[in-house]
Image (cartoon, rainbow, N blue to C red; front, side, top):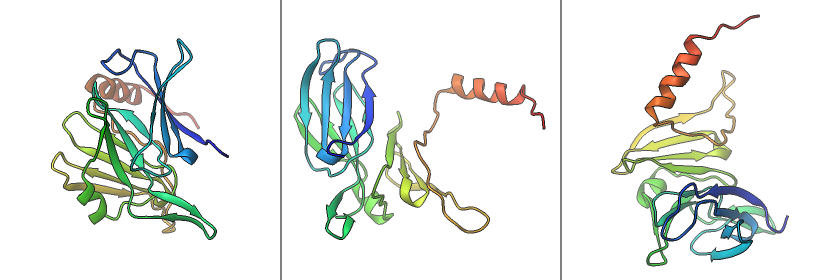
Length: 187
């Protein structure tokens, strides 16, 4: 699998560094993010940097994307993590990389060899999914761990979690609640 496309983030609005309809493609096995413009079939940008076998890519502002860095390499003995997973921020304005809550991620031993994701909320808080170990962590806007969920069954086996999300749209939350309340289940 020489490319392994593992996430596509569409640009839903025009911005100073992309057009509506552009897509950011996360190519895991190349440790690359491609900025592609389907409308003109143009490769706009190749983003490589301090990340290995990354997974999730998100547009987080009009000048930044976040990249969930698995920080993983292949060896003759199999996959190996170099250190904990990271949330890397790329700034298009200055072409610089930074990390979101690096100390908190290390202190809480956030590691997932494959998949995984991060979701930065409007207030600066962060949800991280550690897919391989069935764990979801939530850090407040200061980087302090607020809560942790482990997907453990009654038999004490831990099961993976995939593509978790925090819903922060009040209208959507209320719509979901209303649908749940007005639904009846049949046997």
